[in-house]
Image: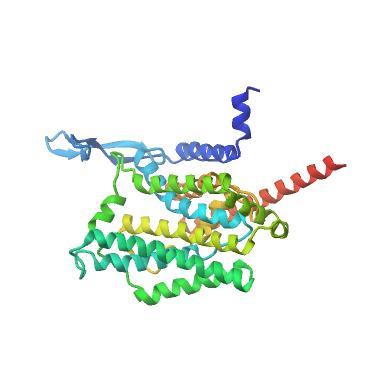
Amino acid sequence: MSSPLRSILRFQESGLLLVILALGVLLTIFSGSVRMPDFERTADGGRQRVFTVNADGDRVPAFVVKNKFFNAQNLAQLAKDTSFTAIMAVGMAVVIIAGGIDLSVGSIYALASVLGAIVLRHYGPEGAGAGSPQLGVLLGIATCLGTSLLCGLFTGGLIVALRVHPFIITLGGMAILRGIAFVITKGQSVGGFPAGLRDFVRMETGDGLSFVPLLAMVLVTFAGWIFLSRLAAGRRVYAIGGNELAARFSGIRVERVKLGIYVLSALAAGIAALLSLGYYGAATSGDGQGYELNVIAAAVVGGASLSGGRGSALGVVLGALIIQMISSGIVILGIDQNYSQIIIGTVVIAAVVLDNFNTWLAKRRLTQASK
């Protein structure tokens, strides 16, 4: 076997890439075709509709037949939708690698969104501070990210101080934080932001690709990769997830690391919330509901072991892409949307079972080698 091919096959995420390729081929084959409006590039780089003349001499819009899955518009939508989940999944991966869990990320996303939205609305076209939109955008960004950091300190601090399992603390935090978001907004949508934020986040290429969320995902993934694989702090995370008692005896300040990982997870949720504010231009207390399942699913499918000690930033991003391709495929294939959560839950269970099986095989090989 040649050296390059051997390197590819040994690449940790090669299996995920093969799954993504297989899903893409299957969706392309079975999705069928659809008639879509035809566009052409303009001189200024924009797009405009193409018109033709029919048999009666009338000018009518032109349409082209494209594959439902494998077309530029759908792939751009897939990339955009994946970016929000993937950013949060990178933060979740750090928590899971350390042997923890964070069920509050969806509620942190919601609370950071609504508080940031309230500040942005104050400086929007109809707000009292309409004369300073640039200041409003900066304060909105600071509020959104600052709220997420405080939420991470809240959940992480309770886990460290009370020495209670993170499942319980973050489950309670999930309810508390979303309840606060609902009380603040009274269940109403908050909109009316300065135009600059939305114009920036929604910048698109000629094919409709929103590259700002995609760029943010790449940067967060790179930062996660640097943190986990190149910094001593990342090695401490793996050490705690592998064996917390041994990590404690080796001199690692376990409580400080645990606090830090929940802050990082919350910050990732805040970044995703900020991008959501810019892209959709509004926020409600119901935002991010159910994101916990998708984010944890992306991390687990991407190779992060729920028993701790294993996982990578790139793996969870590929896992997020797989989860989003499944969700997109359900829509494209015309399957009842009510089956979406059932399918994703099944994928998570299958990933956990496979992870446990791989762990058992590794222990068995180690036992045989020691004999």
